[in-house]
Image (tube, rainbow, N blue to C red; front, side, top):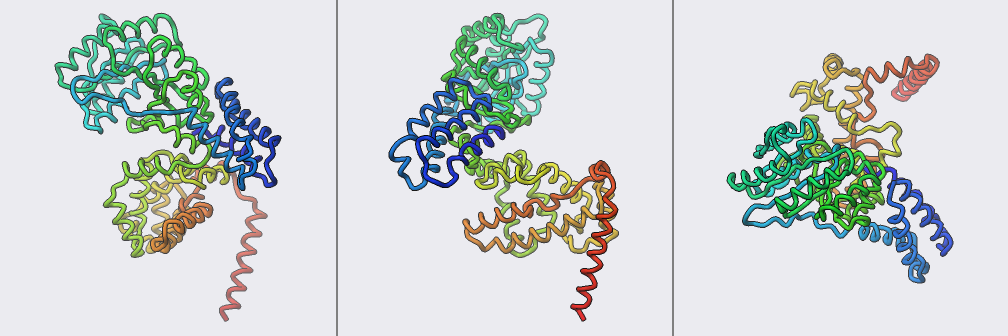
Length: 492
C-alpha cells in the first residue's frame, strides 16, 4: 500500500537528515523533492502545491532552524499536515437507536460498490445491528445475483425485483417498505453505476435521494484510479451532497494520490477503506494512522486492533506458555500462521511495525505470503506426530513429506532447522522486557528468523533456473571435504 509515495517521501526526507546544519535553502530543496514525490504519486496538483506551502511556512522558522534535530521536527510538521489534509474524519455512521436507518450507496461501475455494501452490512451486523440489502443496481448484469450471494453468506436479507419490469426508483421504494415490515434497523441501497459520470446516472440518483430521503449517502471510490476517483467524487458531491467516501482497493494502490487528495478537493470525509476482496476487509479510516503508514512510521494501533479481532486470547496465552517451556511445536507454529494470515497480507502487516516497514524492500525476491504458503504445505504433509516432534523426522520421512508438499527433501530439512533456531530464540525472549523484545524481534527479522523456511524454493522455480554451475558445485564439494578433514584432525 502506497509504496510509491512512501519511497519517494523517504528519499526526500533522507536529504534533510544527512548531517550538517539545516538552512532555509536546503529545507526548500528538500520540500521541493517532497512536492515532486506527491505529484508522482498522482496527488492533485493544487493539493500538493498548497500542502508544500503550509509545510514551508512552518519549517522555515527560527524555532525549527535552531532546534537540536530540525530534520525530525520537519518530519513532524509533514506528518501533522498530512493528518490535516486527510482529516478530520469520523468513521461513525451516527445511526439512530430507534427507527429505520437508511444508507444510500453510489459509485461508478468497477469501484467495488456491491461488495462494499456487503462489507458494510457485515460490519453493522457485528455491531449488533439488523441490516437489509436492497438490490437497486439494474444497470450491471449480475449485480442482483452478486448481492443475493453476499446476503446468503452473511445471513442478511436482500430485497430484489426482476430487472425487466421495474426501475431503480421503484425497487428502492418497495425495498424500503419491505425493510419496515421485516423489522430491520438499517437498510442499505445498492444503486446503479455507470462506466463514467453522466446525466442519466445523476438524474436517477437524485430521484432516489428525493423519494427515499436517506440518512447517509456514501460514495464508493476505486483508490487505484487516482485523479479519476477525485474527479468523480466532485461530480457525485455536486449532485447529491455526500456524507462520506469509502475508498476501495487500497491494498493495490501503490501511489496514494486519491487518499491524500479526495478530502481536500471535495470537503467530504473518508469514512472507511477497503483493503481486500473478502467481506471482512473494511476498516474505519484514521488520518493519523494513514499518515504514519505513508511516512513509513508504522501503525501499531491498527495492527493491535487487527490482532485483537483475529487472535484467540486463550490460544495465544497457551502458546506463550508452551514457548516458555520449550514445547512450541510446528503444530503451534501452523496455528499462529493461520491467525496471522487472517489479518491480511504479511507485507502490509510488516509495514505497520515501526522499523520493519522497509524489510521486504531490502531482501531481493522476498515474498512473505508465498513463503508462508509453502511452509503450510510442508507442515500439512506431516503427520500429527511429526508436527509435535520435528526432531524425530528422519530421511525417509523427509522424502515422504517433500512428495506430499511438492517440494524437495532439502526444503523440509531447512524448515525444520530454521524452526528449531526460531523456537529457541523465542524461548529466550519470553523473559525479556518490552523494549528488549522489540530489539530482539528486529534482529530476528533482519536475519530472516521470523519466517522459517523463507528461502524454500519450489521444484518448478528451481527448474526455471536451470542446472547449477558444475565448477561452482565442484568448488563447494572440495571446500566441504577440506573442512571435514580439519574437523577430523581437531577431534583427534
